[in-house]
Amino acid sequence: MTEPTLLNDRYQLLEKLGSGGMADVYRARDLMLDRYVAIKVLRQDYSDNPDFQNNFRMEARAAANLSHPNIVTVHDFGFADKLLFIVMEFIPGKDLKQLIREQGRFSVEKGIPLIIQACAGLGYAHRAGLVHCDVKPHNMLVSPDGRLKVTDFGIARALATMAPGEKTDMVWGSPLYFAPEQARGEALSPASDVYSIGVVMYELLVGTPPFTASTPSELARLHMSARPIPIREYIPEIPSVLEEIIMKVLSKEPAARYRTADQLGRVLLKFGTLPDPPATATAPTSVAKPVAEPVRERTQPPPRIDPAPKPYIPPEPKTQPPPVVESSSMEDVASAFSEIDWATVGLALLAVVAVLGLIPFWMAVYFSYNPPIR
Image (cartoon, rainbow, N blue to C red; front, side, top):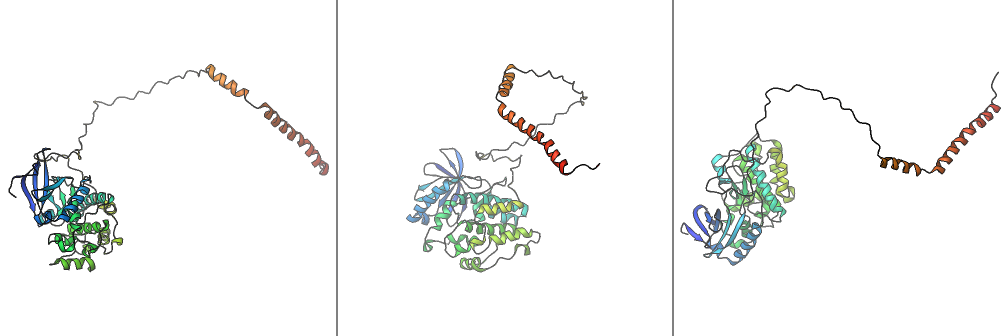
């Protein structure tokens, strides 16, 4: 594809951001809405596959319904010049895999907040009934202010629907992060994404994935049967509780893991929180600020300083005027007084007199049997 070019008479492709066996990614301008976008143009052999085209449209439509701060928004998708493409919001920054290659392993304080954000985005998708199927650091974009967004929902799910014989080497481009049931070709669930998050978390904190091999089949075998090296053997200062969480997430059986990314994210909150964008951070001049993320104003008004403390002057005692009884209140009292059941009051008084009258009688009886000693 010659650069720059016009796609679908609307998107002007400006520069290639990346290329792989599955698709090429471009930074482009939406001429209709006058904004920068990222466009992933799928490879010819995928675009020519009728079954994949149908699955791609269905999954891209489902991904376009996801709206979350930690998910890359899908704006559009289509078929033009005999190529499938998907249009997404443009995120300045790098993917998590690039950051690991450049910076090495992350500390717990810097790494766990990124994983919490990934859990928030994937957990939202899980609540919507969607499983990503291809969670890996390549699909986690990190902006300069530390915001992480998960991408490639529609494409990953569309690839997962292809028959095994139709999958190319690029589909096997993520065996480092496959869940055991995914390696066995079984149905996937949110717990499968949780396992892949665990692999990413392991790599983020250690600097290398838990399993490495030279062939996809050997990687699949390791995910299905091998036990990962405990993370504290690499990094002894990592909290033992965090190591237990990672080992739980990397369990071979889905039922032994956290069921959704939301559950994992809540557990990890004790080790880190979502970062707030710095007050001095400014967005690049070439990219419009997202509408969904307003900048928080952190400036505080200067404190007011009095020139001198004012002397305390006790308040003068206030005399309360005598209560005024309104005529309506007097009428209410008279009405209530007239409603008394005088018959009941009379009977009660009679009973009291009768009881008091029996006291001399009982005293006379008592002294008749117990005369006083003289």
